[in-house]
Length: 298
Picture (cartoon, one colour):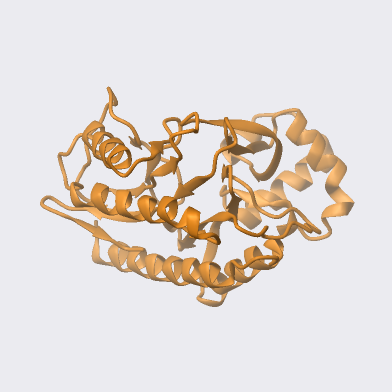
């Protein structure tokens, strides 16, 4: 990896950290979720970067993939645990980070456990380490702290212009192929829940985050309105996930967008919830792996 790429990644990481900290500051009882999302995304843009995906705000049992749709009136409820997941793209170099804020004393241990688990996982990351070992470290630390890992959510490798690429980083032990490679970038993100939880997430009926894959959409037969919308989305969002509130005059093209989603021409990311409704905490860093160490950039 060249010095220019390393510099861009580090800058992206600094911006992501700033945006994450801004989100944590804004998460308060009764705060409008859409105002948090938009403030975080504006922080990223003011730094000369763009969101790599819409700001995710996951409340209580919601683990991932919720961002505010247009006109969202959802507020942070009292005595809740709130995840914020932030991504930054700087010239295609991506940093991904997350944290959890507990708004009740009884939830602080869950939030703190996610942070500790992430710290322990990062300690073992260097070139040549099997990803299955990282899963074992995460699972063992989670259990030691009295919680349960979410087994069907994982970390992931990141490449330029591609948020989820290549290697998967499990949050539980067991067979999982791959080793960490020098010069590669990984997002490591333990998700944990209480011992009463199922330790897995399921898809809700709601989806608020979407994506078009330009290489796939060009091979499909589209109507004129669909072509225009696809071209607009590809040009504006660089094949990265987006929120419909980012689309200018969304109400005007809402019917076309919904039809394309229904037909599978636009990918949707369903909101993910803990199967038994237990609260979930998350912590995440993006790291660059070297031969004998890793560098946390977020």
